[in-house]
Length: 341
Ligand SMILES: *Cc1c(COP(=O)(O)O)cnc(C)c1O
Image (tube, rainbow, N blue to C red; front, side, top):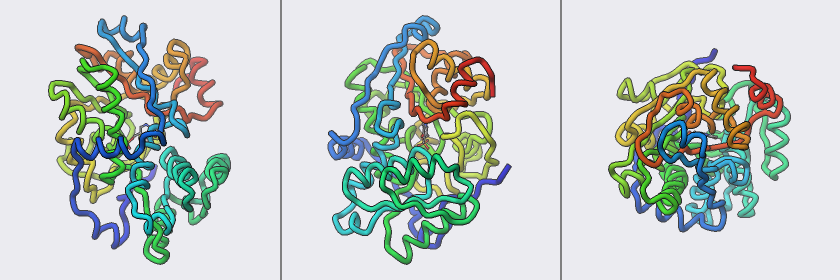
């Protein structure tokens, strides 16, 4: 177990830690900017979950994005919002998960250079996945913090442009574009269940849903093990949390002690945060595979899991954001065959 340190470590990052917000018009601008460069994902009805809840339940399949997660929306919007001069300097991030892949993919699509910094502990298959997208991989140190220090150095010394995983207005607005599609496809939308980690996804969706459908309920869902945003909302400010292993690995990590965008939006716009056990998340992954016929990673299955566990009882047409599909194949097989965490 390691204590999560703030993600923003450098003097430059501290300087930029002035609060910033996102409004409906930012989300609309993002949608126009990224149109044609991300997939307009399908919203499909789940007969089995609809029966269970006695309400229409729909799955928003962000698993269908290139790279298998919604993260491309935010990364693409942030990159397209850069000036020509900034783009030429090249992109950098320390994420090796869905965000890192999205940045590498966006860079390749737009013909830009991207550098992904990672520690020597990152598994070879992840390194290869990022390299195969054409990104430069820099292996530094033995922790995510070491990788983040290298990002700060490249920003300070070489002028590379950091694309943050969630705490950035353009990233939040990009993730929020999901909500415009939802309201188009399901005008009577009453409840949205959103996987919650750094809060870029939840904040972006909530901004537009609360503006266009004020009576709709926004529910954030995290794992019991190390839910940083839930802890921050409870404490009234960002707090350090202990990172633990979880099946919802894409939901791990802190929100940054000098969080400037997502904390305030999540605190103000999320109606309720629900926490799930590992067994409940496993049941969500299993249901997705066996009943919905979708390969879904732990983070993407938390909406399904919350309904199955009876922890959310929606009233009215409900959407579950199925946020990603990147799960280790062997782990997926083990979970689907019935083994819990
Ligand atoms: C990043 C991620 C999340 C959480 O998004 P935040 O904006 O950090 O809250 C959820 N699901 C998947 C699959 C992700 O990659």
